[in-house]
Image 1: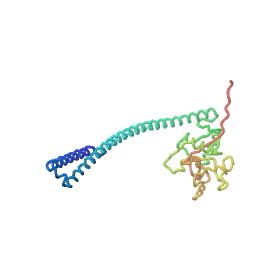
Image 2 (image 1 turned 60 degrees about the horizontal axis):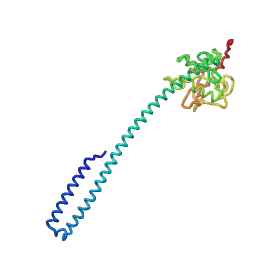
Image 3 (image 1 turned 90 degrees about the vertical axis):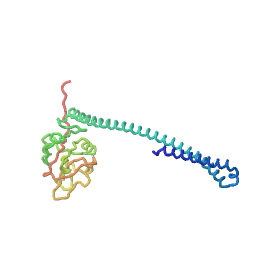
Image 4 (image 1 turned 120 degrees about the vertical axis):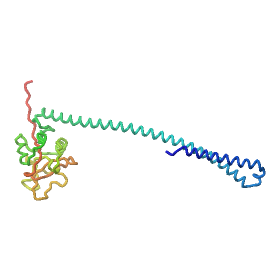
Length: 273
């Protein structure tokens, strides 16, 4: 903020100067009574002196107004600063509440899946989503990976098969619930095998239940990729920035990934009531 003291100092000096001029010319007027009458220069000086006095009053008034405006601005600044601190405190509180709610949501989803799995007839380690039971291999072992054929054999040994994604609802459901895996390797190594191949006819993708994929293609941008010498005939699933476009294709035998199995819930029987 601009200093106020120098402004008052200038005003005091101006007052002193005007007083000196007034005394000087008043003395001259008394001693030489005819001077202010006959000498136009003296008359002009008195006129200028009156003007300076009038202008000096305006300066003092403007100074007072500026001082009040400055004090008001300082007070407003303090109030704004206090409000900013209050809003920051409130925002920090909201952030903590949001984090707590996200943790609670994740816990509830986990509990719901476990309850639905036990009530709906899914085996231990499987999750019930809508009308199917799903097994994500990563939940059983974070280190074991298999090629496409071995992964399907594992699913069959569990009384199921590799997952068949029938519609967008199931696509989004799997995206929202599958374990996001990260590693130091290349991106495709983090994926999950699904039950989709074009082994029989290149470019014609068929599910393990012999249904040809026609309408609901959820391929990632640039996929399926047929470049290179490898025949990339098997599809895998991996969440990217787009939770709908998650499919990509890789070589079936040499590449090892996690996998997703799917089966219908087991019918539970109730004991005597």
